[in-house]
Length: 312
Length: 312
Image (cartoon, rainbow over all chains, first blue to last red; front, side):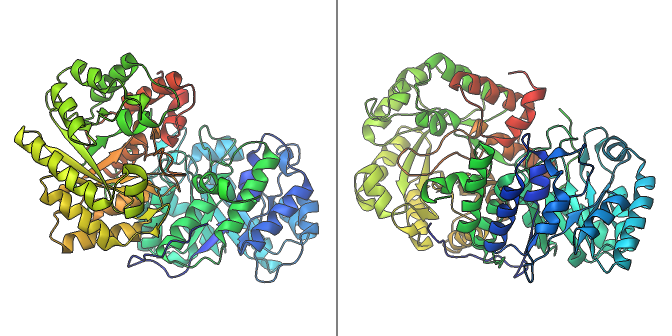
């Protein structure tokens, strides 16, 4: 694999935390259930490739998301990796209890910026959902466990269209107020463009939210994820969610296909001389290996381009 | 198709010329020969979708590129479209004669930034190639025909690796000096990242090249094309090459797969409130229609995302 000399641009962070969501956000959307052994190997390979934050599963009801029915066992069998975060998504108090019992040391909770998606996906109003999450966050903090908050539908919503950014700021600040250490802003249906990203981050800064407490989570549905990410970095965000090989999406939102591919992100950051600690070749090999298990090629451009020169 | 409210960012042009290369750069790389009727309908649909610069064919030797063996007939059957540029690529004086005979009113010539690609692709040294192109450009100008110049391998070369940007500046300024009205900077193997784009454009500006005489031509091999384009716009470039549906590549350079998809570009520019005159739905419908003819789905993310909601 050819190494290209880095060419920095001014105004970017020197280091970025890549928050890998493939094992959770990716695999929960696979039509086939992936075996626990493959999941554990995937996580081990991602850690070996240098990823320091890998979201591993979601403690949802096994009958609702059979793809993640092994969440408890996966958590309990996860080897300790010093310096590596392995958050698990918890939808409610029951999920938090399961996560804690199975040994999770970080959890994530999920809110919607819009009323419609909250009712369709979470089956409750946005304010009911936030009250419930505040309870979860409170219990997690009592247990000494950090909490990450997600806000979905930050830019567009399949039912409501364009989203009022004031609503996003409201939900994000509530998540921070209930004790979330980090809030990830999700473009769940992938319709954001860079100006909308800058506008939302400016509004959040205006509301007193530090960029260091935010992450961005773009889906590449319309090919905009990487350009949006670069704008977010320019605004001071230093944590970026991505899924190895561009896995994932959202089964509840039409055309919410594909997270930003971690490989495409790391190619960008390597090119800009921004440190991630991730070994791109090792990561792409992991996605090629996983693609063999899933029986279809990775949607990541980088993985496809490197496929000829790498062995899974 | 939902319309998303534009969110501008400062420092961008208010208007961008999308230079469509699909009929030439795209179709020359198709394994199957596309019929002349389909090519003519493709061009007509692209114009109807609002594109004002559509490169239509290349006057190469029919035995070398059978996909474009109908170049003369295509040019002579092209209907006049007031206000629309229809350049044809000409590799040499013979090609220029054919283009003029068939009624072309704009031509494009092609140079390599690197010695290796020049020898492998053009079968002559870079300086021999530039001397020959100067002759072509001189004859075209005598005939009152504007000339566009391409520089390929501006960022990386499959044989040489990283490319010295001084070499790119040298070739680009020679093309301008020989009378090219516009020079398109090609990232033929898709390895550029935004910092390299800024660095090259700064060097060109330092050499006295106006950004208005440049175009950028990114391939999306590693998913970087749109982020690179946005940086180029920020530097003052206002002409962007793209191929409808993400067609194309370069048969002579390994892994040079896929131009930036015009739809992904227009989605970005629509989102930023930058005028292009292009109707995104009509364009995506054109790519869906062409994909049916080519027998495989479009690689454009936008085209795939819109496929369910549009009829070809």
